[in-house]
Amino acid sequence: MKRYLSIFAFLLCLATSANARTYYRGDVNTDDLVDVSDITTLISHILGDNPEYFDAQCADLNADGELNVSDVTELINLILIGREEKTGQDYVWDYSTFPEIHIEVSLNEWNRLLQAFDADKNTKEYIVARCTYRSNGDRTEIDSIGLRLRGNTSRRRPEAGNPGKMHNPKNTNWQHVHFGLKFDKFIDDKEHTILGVKKMNLKWLKDDPTYIREMYCYDLFRRFGVWTGCDDNYCRLYLHVEGDAKEVYYGVYEMIEPVDKAFLKRRKDLFENNKGFLWKGEGGVAGLNTINADIYFDDDKDHTYCLENNEDQFEAARAQLVDFMLKLNGKSDESLYKWINEVCDVDLLLKTYAVNVAVGMWDDYWNNGNNYYIYFNSTDLYNYKFFFIPYDYDNTLGTSLNCGAQSDAGRQNPLNWGKKEHPLIQRLLAFPDFKAKYVGYLKELAADDGLFNFKASKERIQAWQNKIKDYIANDTGEDMTIYDEPASWGNHKEYRVLDEGNNNFFKVKTATINALP
Image (cartoon, rainbow, N blue to C red; front, top):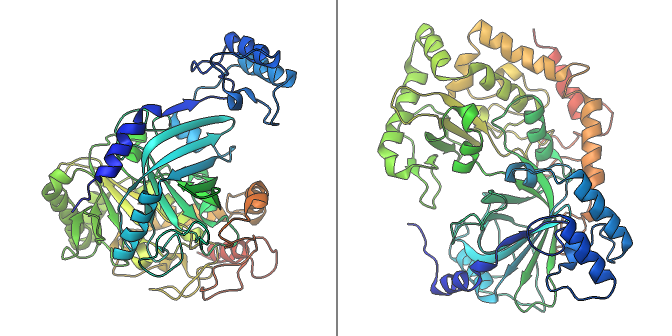
């Protein structure tokens, strides 16, 4: 059952909602424009006057903590060059930036989050918070956002302690956790967005001492033309609980684009329609191989197949999914070949899975029945296009496990990556032309000049690590160094991503791919 906003949270929304706005670098006089009047205001301030409307942070264009003639020069240059107008998607997931996210929470709301976790560690309850998003000199301040905990096996209490223990400002044992931010959770208007972006997931780099695995994978999807992959970026996360002497620095996090209605809308032209049914497959059993599975909509509980939109049309969505599975499993080879070409961009699907297997994603649809979305771009029972959306790529690049058909993510045969009873990829590769395309994409990635080539991969990885290395130390005391190893619980602890020896994952995987006929 959906949870409703507490009276306290509602009153807080009313009290603070009018203050949401974006402050742009150079908007010295706070009129939402960057023009000559800002130069006049800045010069007036430097000369000792006291302008009625003045924002010191927006005026400090060179970010040196002082306001002087160099800031005037920067402002003139900014105006002459002109500000590039970006969509929220381009602005938030601009990989050249390294944003800061500052979260402020009242003591009552923070304790309510701790209580919700203690009652149910899988809670999806939102509390009310305030967010300041800073990027490249701009800042967006949004009151009354929704803040929640996220994660599956990684979910834990943000403050270590026994159940029932409330926030202790003098002796807080902070722990890394995943958060979800929904800016318009409580007040649905354009001010409660970042240039239209309504949600983001904040993920700590759990079990990845390299700090780059998921970043690498989503970047590779994009570079290889798999447009169904999520956007992501690094950020620095801060949290302040009312009454604490200072905010806690949680460290470097990954900002990930959620797969939701907004995800579909941003790719409307590519999907051809964004009003269809979106499903999430999870739980390690979502193999698209039985209609007797747990199929439901998002009711704050976990289901094998969870409908993420259009809940009022659940029965129609369920019927469509069931019909799809019946055909995928029951059609003859000849009939399947004709049908799958009609309802699916097979080329995109095979390209997606080539990236998936190249990076060693074993906790996926094919092997573990997990961590993916599927989208039908129409609500019609039979007339639709089907899309596979990859998701959750932290257990990759040598983090391997004995699971399903897997024992070694680097050496496992890419043609036998997963379980035979998971039909979507298994059946497609039985067709020679589909198999040839799939193998061709793998070899394109692994070629000497390919995107998965060790030298090219090493350059990207080192650039990301150099960007964040000075910001890794954090107030939780966890994950404080970058080092080249897979997750400690993996079954192949020898794999490396930067070391050029015999255990380099890229080299091992490239050899495995190039051995394919």
